[in-house]
Image 1 (cartoon, rainbow, N blue to C red):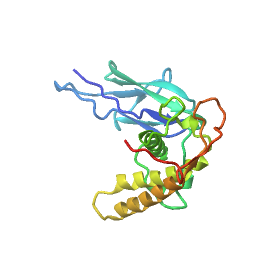
Image 2 (image 1 turned 30 degrees about the vertical axis):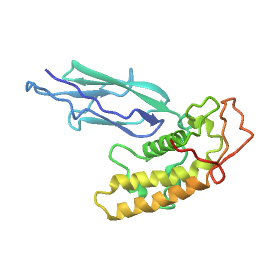
Image 3 (image 1 turned 120 degrees about the horizontal axis):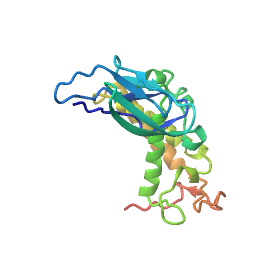
Amino acid sequence: MIFPVLELENIVQVNDKTRLKANKSYSPDGTAITLIEIEPEAAAGFIDVTSSQYLDYQYATDGTKTVTLRINGSDTATKTIDVLSQAGDRLFSSDAELVPHEPDIMNYVRAGRNSFLDVHRTAQDRILTWLDEHRIWDINGDKLTKEQIINLEEVNDWSKFLTLRLIFEGLSNAVEDIFFEKANRYKKMEEAARNRAAFRLDANSDGQEDANKLDFRSFRIYRA
């Protein structure tokens, strides 16, 4: 008996390296695992990953991809991964914007990736969640979407410094180590950028910029 366990990211951008992992697959009854194969998308064909137990891959087209793990030629597990175009991902900041602040930042990209796009995506989600928590909603009272932020330059600094904070928080393993200090510094810069923010929104999703601009310097924030 073998239990195939497939781990992967939920979302990735076109041409962004991602790691499809099978290393947590196991056999409760001691059956030997002699062959591990991964098919990164339908009709791509299975690739033998027995030695490494993972497959590093990047997708050339967007869409929902079905990943299949096959062990010993028969036991399988499948999951889907959403692959977004750069325009569809609509991230608020980029790796190139991190480098002027931290020239060696790309040295810290985690194994199985070639960018920090996943962290920029987390920053995007945190920003939209912050707006929701502070009752900055669309015309129907729903959480704003990334598409409703008209001008990405207006959230760029907020996203950039938040991304840097998240990266260094992930690297820190002790209070007051260099990464902890950097995370704190970028947190202050993040908060300053957020407090300076002024948004052009499309709150009714009609494809047109709203007449009024949301300016945090004069906008009353309601706390739950």
